[in-house]
Image (cartoon, rainbow, N blue to C red):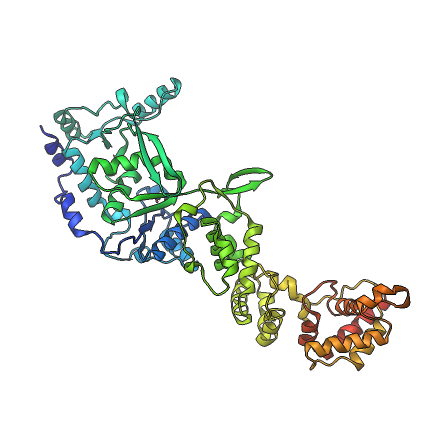
Length: 547
Ligand code: GLU
């Protein structure tokens, strides 16, 4: 019996050949240099921040080269599949504006002509490729039972040998097709293994776009390519899909770098051109001075939902990821106020080879810069949306008078160097609660405050219609009249004065806000208005005289 006949016995229903599919999915008519890449998650419904980084990297490189970014769902490992897993992934990525040119658009539908884009619907295609290997003697049915496999593994562990099916352990590698066919007819269970042409003692060299030149021993393991259920293994599906979907670049987490010898060998066995690979290093965390990988189990910041709940804008997360992708991004971003991430030219050469430390403080800083560039209306809208989901009480207060809240958000915004104190939506309540009477708490302490002086100032000098310069000139004049000159004058002769104008402002700030530090006092007073300031002064008097 020939290998071809054996292949026919194993795959009687496979009628097409590889050429048929290659014609069905022709080479793409993209421009020279266009990157065709994919995000290929298992439908676990969970997007890890590292996966967001890998997918964002793919998205950016495809976009900036006018290429194609597609979503392929890798569901051959049915144990990992969760209900609605595809939708959840798509939604999470869409929230970050990571969208696809092709691929799955929900659990069942897709767009693009290189599909199906979900592996469970590609069984026939995979089997066509596997049939070819069996028919040419490059793959074979393997009848090793679970027990035998465990036995082999134990022996290999005991003798400190490499684990896997190779050499003498590849018991069915050279089985005569006739005997193999007989076993199949007898109903023996089997998987299909690659008849690896590699030798462990030879090296292969390859270039990773991020990690540079790599050298590995050739793969000599007869790896499984088809499981008992007729579905391919991940390695094999990767070959078929990336070949037929005409992928030019595989951008993925570096946990797959050790699979390169297998992947390259598979392309070589078929005589296909392999895509270029870019392996993205893992995100690391400094955990009590020990650097380790971010862990889904230990670190809440691993899930992208964390940022949503904390109120960190998705755009800020992306800005931070962009600095991880290319460290020179941050400087560029700081210098280019009106540009967006997609205007930056990312390069594979600048992607970090070792893992990047994922630093929430750094994320906070870049988020502050992001907020400082938003208009009051943008912050208002985004914050209201966040509060509606996570802080209904403040939502009601915040949205009662939108113009009032917007005026607060505009404090020190329309100036050359706007304040950088908001990192997340939830900061707004902490920063400005005292501007809302419903949240203001009169928790003054008895400090040395000349309340009569302040009352005199508000009553007789302050006008909420003054512009900032007039306000400052007036308060300075008032202070001087009452024994508080300019700081300079005060410092020359401190014994002649009660304090300086700055002290008057400090007292005023404290009574109005209960804080010793706050954003611009003029703006705060202007927004609160004279009557409410008077009210707070009166309240202060009442409370502090009772302390
Ligand atoms: N399905 C694989 C994963 O979930 C993707 C590997 C690849 O991109 O080749 O990690």
